[in-house]
Image (cartoon, rainbow, N blue to C red; front, top):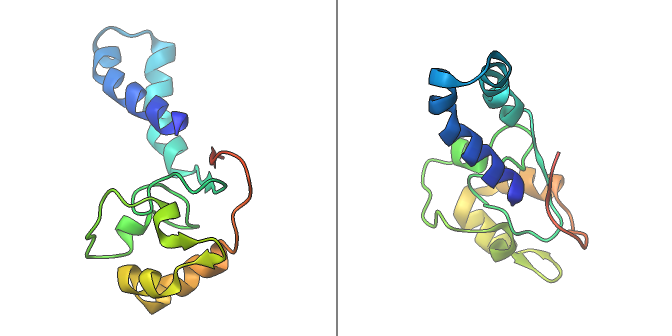
Length: 116
């Protein structure tokens, strides 16, 4: 969660850094989109965005599904104690994407979600 906040703060500072930041900071800001695009969440406590966090292999789910009904949905909202709420998962993303999700994440482990 803190990693998402850091990226948001740096993005908001980028305009200011463009005007008066050092060359060093400007170069860091320039590569942040590439860094963010190559990061992925390791799911543990399921507290990240189901739609917008980068936890699937390729893209966030918002880029794979056309109709997002519940933008505030967290991964934990689609899980049961025994694993995924398969029926709800199928309703949200369809059968093909649901199959990909179930292959990616079988069960969560204790601990915080980590951006890697």
